[in-house]
Every structure is written in C-alpha cells, then in structure tokens.
Length: 213
Ligand code: PRP
Ligand code: MG
Image 1 (spheres, rainbow, N blue to C red):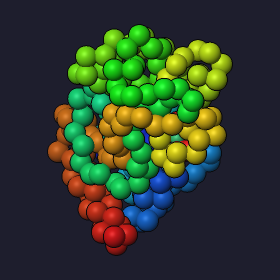
Image 2 (image 1 turned 180 degrees about the horizontal axis):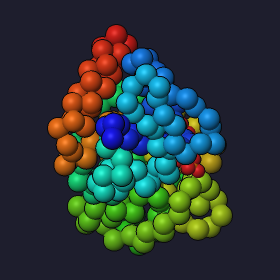
Image 3 (image 1 turned 180 degrees about the vertical axis):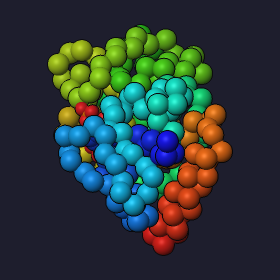
C-alpha cells in the first residue's frame, strides 16, 4: 500500500484558512469539499482530516493523524505528548484572565474566592496554583466572554487576539497566562517512510515561511 501522510487540521475556526493556505503555498493541492471530513491531495501523498480542534492533540498522540496544525495553547491544555516541528507565525493569541470593566482589581489576589469561566481549565488551574490563588473554575466550551454578563462568573479566562470580543462584552484583560501561535506537531513514533514524507512537507513549508518574512 502506498504510504500517505495523514494531516489533521481544524474543521472550522481560526486555524482553518491559515492551515490550508500554507499547504497550498507549499504546492500541495487539496481537493476541498467543505463538508468532507477527509480530503486527498492529488499531487502529494497526503490526506487532510478535518477535525474538532480540541480533539486534534489526542489524534496525533494516538497516531490517527501523523501530523497536525494546532494552537500551542491546546497542546498545553491537553498535556499532549507530541513533538513540535515548526512554529508557523500565524493565529497568534494569548490566554488571559479578564474581568468586567467596572470590577475593582488591585492585583491577582483579588481573584481569590471568585468564579472564573473558561474552556481551558487545566492551564488556568495550573496558573492559579502557581500564584497561590483559590478560585472556582466553571468550564464552558465557547462564547466564554458572555459568562459575567449572565451572572455565571466574576471573571473569564479565554483566548485574546484582537481584543474585540473582550471589548464588545465590557471586559478588560488583567493577567496574561500564556502566549500562543499555530504550530505543526507530529506523532513521536512514525515509520521512516512517514518521516521522509514529513521532511518533504516541512521543507516546503519552511520555504514558504521564509518568503513571508
Ligand atoms: C475566540 C476566542 C475569543 C475570541 C478572541 O472565539 O475564544 O472569544 O476568539 O478573538 P478576538 O480577541 O480577536 O476577539 P471564537 O470566535 O473562535 O468562538 P468560540 O469561543 O465560541 O469558539
Ligand atoms: Mg470565543
């Protein structure tokens, strides 16, 4: 059987366009039906799997996908045992704690006893533990910035890019927990044949990234 590389990318969301564009500018064309969950390249032995963002790290760990484009922040959250092969320089963002603009805030101690809504409980808990803060974490999977407005929490911890979602919801950023960008990761136990294919893909991608600088 022909060796083909399985590449996982976000099905929808902010990494989707950048991921496909990168492959395309590396000369790898993907026959893209948007509703398809798997698409093949006809000029490179590679298939693209469109997956839910939060599932991607585990798919790479399990070897369902050989490589993936994913946000660094998600690798931290999922404690994923994968190898980062290239930082891609797009989808830059930070994971931050924000509070309603009218709330008083004199420092991180003010988060003691507060309820914080987030989709990144592991990363947030680790940060709070390091700072010695005892707060209650509420996990929600999206639209986190609405939580203080509906009385669900006193603060939020979510990704910030332009800052416009915070602004529109009357929130201000107070603590930056980590900075993130899109990266390519690979499974740690690949066959030499797959490694050779990855080298080819990465070579092309590096050429594209260098040209962008
Ligand atoms: C992401 C993230 C923030 C927002 C940050 O949400 O969760 O809410 O983008 O971007 P900004 O600072 O440029 O406004 P997304 O729109 O992907 O939706 P979701 O949280 O509901 O998944
Ligand atoms: Mg959001």
